[in-house]
Length: 362
Image (cartoon, rainbow, N blue to C red):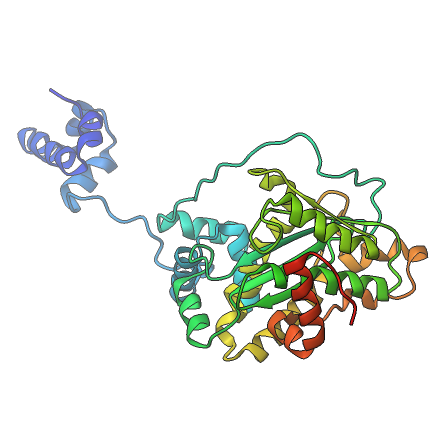
């Protein structure tokens, strides 16, 4: 005959039925039943007096348990954003001012079957720059972000942004030494905007006493040189007057723009995913974008290579001997359409240059 413990592994109900059968055949003798089945008398009493199914082990009271409404919120945001416990903890603090420990969030996600999203990552043993000798505003990275890409933000955020006609594209230049960022937005993506943004940022740096040669690493997108050697040469010829060199990355080598690419993820988590749906026009959006840029440049610590938890402002402060003003970090977040509209003469000169490849002063 199969034993009690083997039977219980298959079915707790069948195991207790077995106890009752043996108990009946042995004249209701608890001690003899326990001896035959190799179990305790307490187990026999529980089987004959209690229910066949297992009793829930859930405690009657759990004073430290997360309230159900908060647990539902954590599960909802985890499904909506795809964040795991560490990113979700920060997200909840910023959006709802709710603080939970990472272990609490991890337990709630596990209990509700929220699985971890697996991503493949390329491993590289070499750094992009020699950070020990790198000085501010010598190496910059430039990239654009299609905000409406429908993969990084919750669907309702995209719907809100479309409904209120908020900007579609984000332009970022990041200094690789300090991680300081310079941001603009636009409704269109074209090379006129690309060249204008580069010139505007460089003029801003030069106006704030940034000296020395600057190299900008960028991709070969249509908003830049599109892989055209002729166009790259024309742009570099003009930018040479400002002491700037453009350095496009090889095709398929997106990891060479890792610093600016990683910043896009931070934009999704801490700005667009939270504040975009609170904006009802482009003016509100640009104001909040400028606050986010100020937060990034002055208050947000970076743990990237060479930063050691410093903010861009703190990192720049260690090079105080090189600069006269820290207002360089207060770059105005602009809409490129408005920039060119306000400078009609500059737009005409720039268009003539991009079409003919020659610069004709007016």
